[in-house]
Amino acid sequence: MEKYLFTDGTNVIREAQSKEELQILIQSSADPLKVRIWLFNTSEWISLADFNKRTSKFISPDKKVIPLIEKKEPIKPVRKSVIPGLLKKTLIGAVAVAAIFLVYNFTKVTWEKIAPLSIIADRPANNPPVDVDSLIETIEILRGQKLDKITRTNLRIRNTWPDLLQLQLNADRDESREGFRYYNIELSVDNSTGYNIDNAIVKLDIWKNNEVSSSDTLRFVNIGYATPAKRKVEGIYKGDSVSVSFTSIKSKVFNFCYSSDKRSNYGNYNDRWFCKE
Image (cartoon, rainbow, N blue to C red; front, side, top):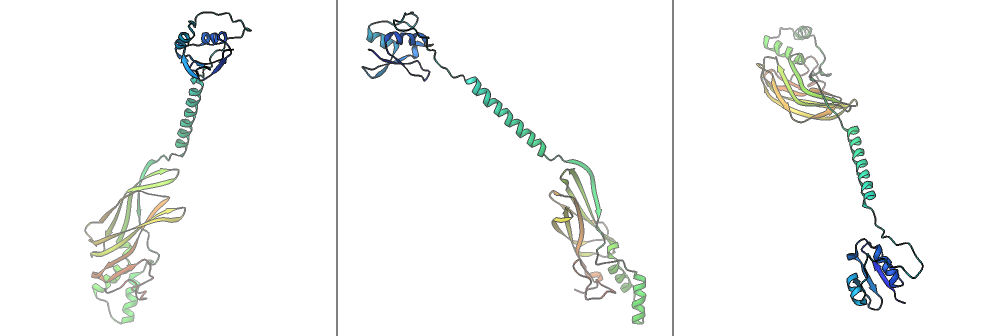
């Protein structure tokens, strides 16, 4: 009995027990040029044309042959459709894109520009208001003599400096569900003492949940009294609010040294910020 192996390029190999069965397989092939037949006596795959030459019998894929064996339904080649797989990949990709889009839009922070911010530094806690006239009168009584004009003027400036040195912050700001962001920040010191200020250290605090989340310091030097001194602050700051304050101020011309971490200089509460350096 002759045996053959048959394939037509569909990655399926079938066995034929006779030429009649082989003929059925050849007829069922969609493309005779892709037909390959394995001859057991030669142990090799050959094309349909070579098989016809070797067997001296032309087997036409169009010729109907009535098999002598039990009739069987023609075996149709199984072809995998690429459409369902492609459709599945397309749907998965579309779902992934939609998910990314929804997550992005849900988590995206949208900032809306609001009115600019303008604040003035609060009066320092370690420099409460003073009745300077009463203070001068007390000093003169204790000394038993009048104070000269310059001494009276300088003492008045040292004890009322928060009213004469105004620290201001101006900034653009945006608002979102995360809070505020501040940018184009400008700090200015308006000096109305009538004297030059040698230097001043200014602190910028960013607040988040009632705590300082970040701080920056800036130094002003040679602050005149004709026009306010101004400094730009680079960058963007995010938080619930901002505040500014003086850390230290010094002016030799009227013997003044202020520090935010002191109660007074030399323990002299009648003239708490007097110093000579």
